[in-house]
Length: 600
Image (cartoon, rainbow, N blue to C red):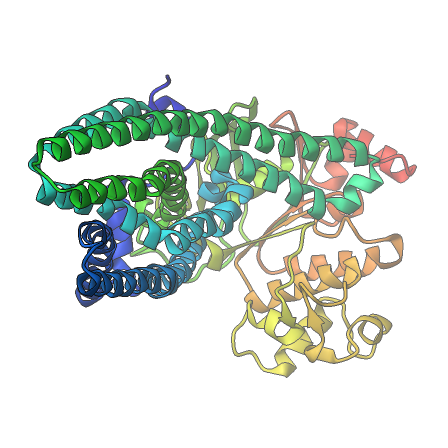
């Protein structure tokens, strides 16, 4: 059997340990107070007393079967204890546990989401979107369903053993012997399986996270998938990941059945030992027939508790693993030490971007950038062109602080964005616009307020107009019939790609960052609106340090400087005229683009 360290090695964010989990749960406002525990303990104690008392009354009924007065008394008492038992376990305890754990789950989910939002983006990329969503949803739900819906059964089951043992010892101390042998046997065979179940549970959650990531890819990239004819590939990839979830589920079943088989044998052995001992003690006259019957009834009633415990051993491990995964996410932002940003300039004006000895490779992947040195002069617009896979987008996300370089440094206005700047400083000074533009659910006004909170309607409309969306123009009347009150984002009518991109450019104008990176931000526009978006992009890039990953070479032509990248290296550097005259790679790309054959 593999050890825990190697089994969790594949997980970029292993489940939190017991100490960290307890510490975080105690920090929650909804964590049970001392009075809650005392009240719960009192209720459970009364229920356990009722459970064992009803078994004792069975023996008393047998011993007093000829005495009608005593028989009726014990019959009434048994009915009362059974009523207390059923009401307590069937109504009161489930409500207490379910209500408490539901509130804990809600606060844990909020805390995990808050931690995610305060974690550097590069670390989130390492974990993966699918894993984060699984931890925020299914993992927390698994823990709540197990501990909330089955918590009362678990507590009653665990306490049934000591209460039963004490009750048997009251009848006769000899009953401690079969219980000792039973406990020893269970401990020996359950020790290994209990250690193995968390690994199985974590792999199950990890396979579900991978499937979720593929599903998100399939949905988000639906238009691209259809355009490139990759429907079959996307379907097969999703199907394969779904079958991997099923495979992991079947892998977990043998361990569960292994527990059940040994549980049956252990319980049968305990029952036979107690039954034989009861017959012997009754035959010797050391206990009455009623007491012997009580002992057997106590063990018979323990059967369901034993198998609940066996089932719970697997369910609990899965629940604790799921909770550990969610708690690890909730602790994520605290575990990562970010620079405090103290002493950094609050504002920058046309900062230089200096890239020194920069290298980058994705996990388990080839090197994308190698020993790159570059200086982007402040206040200028630099276009980055090259074939697909040259490393253009990778360089863009590195400058935006969305990935950590493998080696080297990136400084913006003299500030090293990887070692000196925190997320707040980076996002306030560097903005990245890509093809994938996200609109926040709500009104257009609320979406634009994300860039400049509290901005007046006049300011918002001016920014939209500057970005190319004239309130009196056809695009505005066609797509924004309610003006700034038009619903956008999830749950609203889908806007045209060019309108979405204009809104993203308007957000840049409102935010007014000193550094702007546009990663093919206008490449999705059709020819009808391409010129409008290019003019808006040019306006957004003006007056700041801008890097444009150019899809259309007329964008590059307007830049102050053009860089041609191939295989992670800058192979040409100059203005449009200089590179055309050099008759190199850029001149070749520009010639092909002019002829309408440009594909990169």
